[in-house]
Amino acid sequence: MFEIENFDIRLNTDYIGRNFIYVEEIDSTNTFLLDKKNGVSISGTVVLAEKQTKGRGRKDRVWYSSKEQNLTFSILLFREYKLFEKLNLLNFSASLSVATSIENLYQLKTELKWPNDVLINKKKTCGILLESSSHGSKIDRVVIGIGVNVNQTMFQGQFNYPPTSIRNELGREIERERLLAEILNNFEFYLNKVMYEPEFIIREWKEKCRMLGEKVYIKEGELVKNGIFEDIDKEGFLLLKTKEGIEKITIGDVSLV
Ligand code: BTN
Image (tube, rainbow, N blue to C red; front, side, top):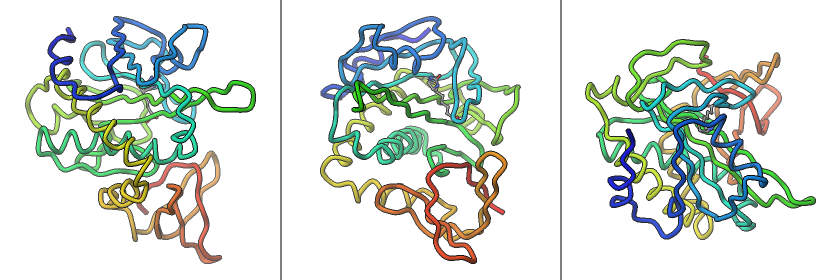
């Protein structure tokens, strides 16, 4: 059982998570916040679900997560037009928030995998799905869905990367309330940086990405591209050095050769 009071006393934000919706079961926290018919339009709203019946991952994958073991939640940003100009940096902010929280609370070394997975010991402990919906031709809501494997110990199903949980890597059970509050506190800090010091986000993200300079391949559907992970540009795209020159990668899964 998630104790909302215990979470609340640790939350230190101005607006992220101040409107907090806790549900036992839902199809997907992202789907819920994206749908304007549900009537949630307070920026910073967080929806946390103990169980998702249709949890979604990137590229139409399924996100599996055991009931009451982990953190599956989404954050709504509503009409934050300045932030919406930098969607990749929002993605980076989310993964940085999770990585920093894990390092600070449990002294576990984390690694970031482009575009937004958080790894511990080369295994995936968190995935992020950023989605948006528009009013007319203008994006008016962005939903950042975060799934952190916290206390789950067994993983079944098909994964594009070997999964793990914080508990598996640390060897003890984790207090989810404290972790969620820390992630949201950090997320608000990074949002501020997206607005006023975007280069800080890129710098921090690159420090935690251990694939930089390595030989990698990028898979996008059937297409595979090989090269060297040269850099991240200021918008957050991956720059791949190939025989033909530098190619800007906007989508795909990156793996070490
Ligand atoms: C991925 O690595 O493919 C992204 C996984 C994102 C999962 C989270 S769990 C909360 C939110 N609701 C969803 O349906 N998906 C995201």
